[in-house]
Length: 326
Image 1: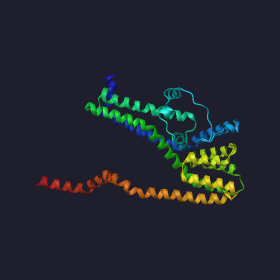
Image 2: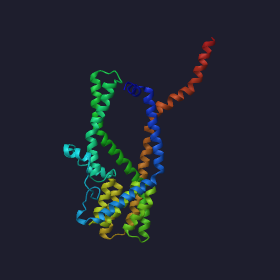
Image 3: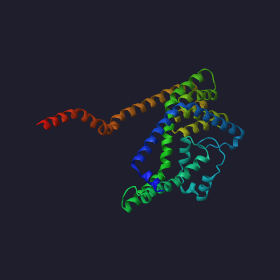
Image 4: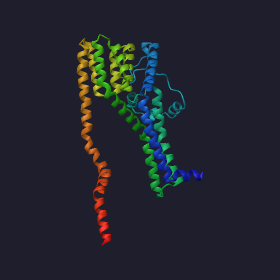
């Protein structure tokens, strides 16, 4: 036990462990870009299973929730803990269900997992920090500062699941919107070629998977809901709720109005593709305009000291040599 404590308190070991984690994360990121097809196949298989499940059920069993599909009830340890402690009401948040759908998690199981970790994370963070502060005694702080650090860790643990969910939603929305204008162009080509809207969406979901797996999954779900939901307008509304982006919502409204009033769908798709392309361009310009302000601190911390060393170093060495000879 003493050897283990010495190992985890040695700064050199902690530094090596941190470097190892960073290297592993880098390798995992590089490998994830090579296994996109596998993820796409898995997600398309899951969508196909949901489509078959939706087909087997009667239309009366289909609800209009955020995901647009009904799932079986969750069973397990986390479900028992959430039900016994009544966490769904204790930590009730009306936006969680919509946020889970926006992050790509559907059904009661991810929602139960979220509530479980939102309850357990403060205690986990608290125990880890308390172990380091009071048992291992990594830093020699006063007792009050140690207690404050433990309370801060508990607060961070409470908000950690929300931060993870927000980060997941942002990444998923960014991936969808980067490929959405291209998907609308493909959809426009399919519609003008004479394909029905269901067949066009299904075809585009297969082709767009190489650019955005998330968008391919959403279009596949849209195709399934268009086939089996009692009202086609509900399918378009569910797509807007799952993405929660103005560009997608405007496309959903335009397609609903085109089917309701009989206006040409190709014209609406052409206009929506141009608008979403303009939105993507404006987002890129906004990000580029923010770069100079964001690069100020890294330049001050990393570039300027090196620049001063390169410029002033030889002069300082010459002055030192001159003073030594004198």
